Amino acid sequence: MGLLRKDKVKDERVINMQNKIYREISVLVAVICILSILVKMYVLGMGFKHTFTEYIIIFAQGIYFLIRTVNLGIFTDEVEIHDQQNKIPKRTKILIYSLAFGILFPLFLGVRSAILYGEGGWQSVETFFMVLAFSLMFYIPLAFVLLIFHELAKTHSDKAVEKVLDDPEEDDSNDEKY
Amino acid sequence: MTKNIKLKMARAEYDLSQAELAKRVGVSRQTIGLIELGKYNPSLNLCIAVCKALSKTLDDLFWDESN
Image (cartoon, rainbow over all chains, first blue to last red; front, side, top):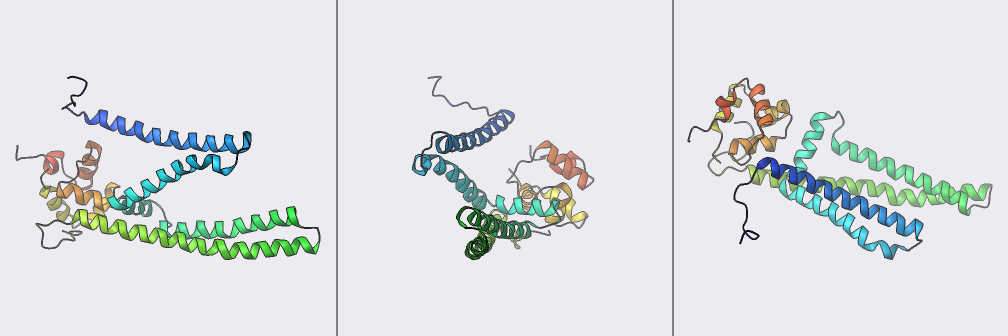
């Protein structure tokens, strides 16, 4: 039966092109989900529960990608290549960006609350500082949580790399030099 | 795939670690390690880049003499 017979010859160029297409499909699915969320929430006025499926698809893609890259040790390679090509190491960048977000977003929330809920004058200033203080207490630790998460992922990925590079025929399993 | 001992020996000639060679070629240490262990099939471009980094030819480093 020709329909069920698997092709024996696998052309690497064809496989590479197919993999590229699968990659584009995953980006397309994420874009469609984001558009769906935007249309449902802002055009059709639907609530969050109507976009649950789209959020699951987007987060499931990201989480699956993260788990697979960590388990295959590719996460380590990504960090290594990044650090080779950039002056600021990835770990430092994550800390800087997440701290910047942890400060800027509370500032935005403080200003927004002061404008929406403030009654003018000192009351608005008080609202600003109160919202800022509580937001900073939440978002600054989040920056460190992200860094810890990155370190855990890197450690797990490093172990996966060592396992893959472990050569049972060599005495010194860590064959970094020669 | 069999191990690539020739690559390892060429790297030793230049006293390079896997990480140092990886940096010169523009790949990760794991990739160089996997090529040496015969667990990864590099593209022609990568083979050429490795040869240039070690001043060797493709035959010197990647020709499979067992065939």
